[in-house]
Length: 422
Image 1 (cartoon, rainbow, N blue to C red):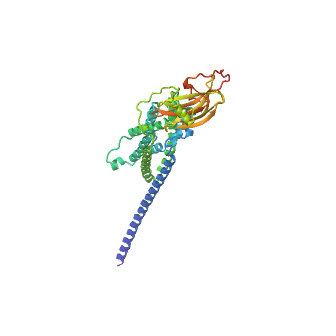
Image 2: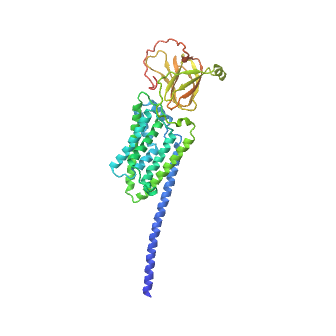
Image 3: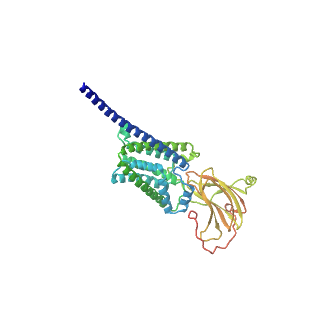
């Protein structure tokens, strides 16, 4: 009787021990599941907030950045490249996926170099030759590249497709080419200097690499510290599934932007760069004088800026003469500089009144000196852009070959204030 009781007690204790182990394991699974869910929800929320806050720009640049690169030399191009990479969340996510399971310096250097080589080639070549595609489509593919690298990290090809994965080194080079194309497309939205174009592109690319190295060091420190934790296996699974989620959201957001782009003619690729005439003398055609008089304007002028080209249009104003103007394109933004040059000046001086990147501008001017006053426009798109310019005031149109008053050359040397105008 006693023996039976001891046996019953022993069995009960064994069952309780096994039950306790099962409960502990279930608790661990539950905790891990909750952690994964919270991580994914938090990551998705942060990504959506980031995308919505930067949706207008994507990889785009603010007006301050545009003016900086217009005004600045190679150091400003380099700085802009570094900050552009550090704010390029899709490029950083891709780099994070590349180095996730790499533990030796040799492997890290090999794969990061492969990515650097890929994006450097297309960044330099495509920008130098003015090759473009719609940036929403490029960024959508970049989003898919983030999904790809994470899918490879979880061994998805063998697990879910039952096939061997492609050569990772070659895939990183190929995907790097696409990332470089995206960087080039964004860079070409700016009015790059024709005289030092290659050097400016290289400076921008050097900045990209410096930004990438800075981000890479931080990523490696975080991953190395986390790798020592017993929870790294859980973290790796959460992180790579999170990358797939992030890449998918990036893809959907960019495709949404593509679907709502208002200028479908910009979606075509240019296999060969459009020929730049290099001429800065505008060929303007006068509108109907009656229409101008009825609208209150003295002249209505149509100016066509060629693809990848630039032009100037000038009026002569005597000292203290006034000019009122308004111009607009069909919605395409152009870099412009509204400026004036004194008649008789031999130093190359000119005064810039207003400049920026926009599809329209208007205003008035009272000339502080007698000379030519007007606009310089730069078109970085693959299609010609037509400008409708309206003016009124006390001026002479230079395109009508009117004789200008003779003025003695200025004796006081004045330095140039802008490098983009001859």
